[in-house]
Length: 316
Ligand code: ASP
Image 1 (cartoon, rainbow, N blue to C red):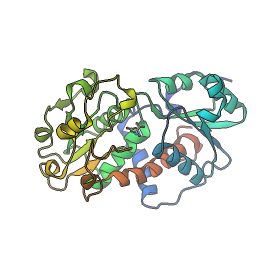
Image 2: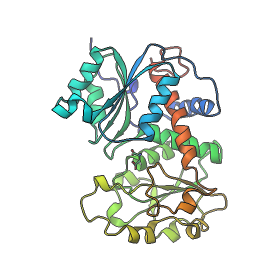
Image 3: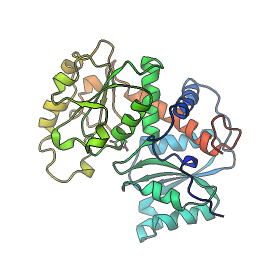
Image 4: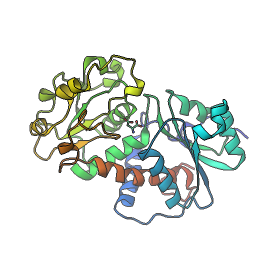
């Protein structure tokens, strides 16, 4: 009973999500983040975390979110599964569908892999992209937008936002830029070594400012990115010390930003490379608030996609 591919049934990307839908999800997530009651909307629903790439925050917070909604949660460890015997991703999905699993939270090394699986999934199956290659990480984008709204108020349009680091290999950067543009942010600066800048389409509407001391002046938000060494061809960044000297955030540089500026990083943090301990653990850092909001956002997303027609913003 396969119906034609309906991308809105899944959450694959923030590109193309309407502002209205994004704000509804953020509003619901904010309610959960502030301790609002979580309904047992996924009572009896089976959800599998299908992670073909490592993860700490995303995997565990999806697990917690699904459990709080009352779902049966299955973990999938590539190294101890038949994927390690060569079973294809699609056969893995179909095997789990045959067991009655309806929701799949999927992380994959390859760009577009989650969309491709969604295109072959059964009619009632729902996929959530938990990060594919360099392409997208929609729940990270939503939790970053939620964190920004909590820190700076609901109207993000007047903010000056700086994205620093390995934009080229970062699905978080691509997704955050989509989120920021959708919510009306106009002053977006990007600072990165030339070899870590992405293809020009990714930077639509952004100003590239080469030196961090210049780029950071007067900004309200600094979004740091991890150096994605697992996705780099050798030699792109010659020395981590050199990277830190030019693109690392320390207290001196942070003092050049606007008063009350906030610092974000999706984790895992390479301490002493992208940011000093003093800043990562200091009063301007929202890093742990991002982690906390990750649970709230994932509750809102799973509720909307799998909670049936009674879910406040369900698509069912
Ligand atoms: N945890 C985020 C991701 O999976 C960021 C990172 O790994 O750098 O994309």
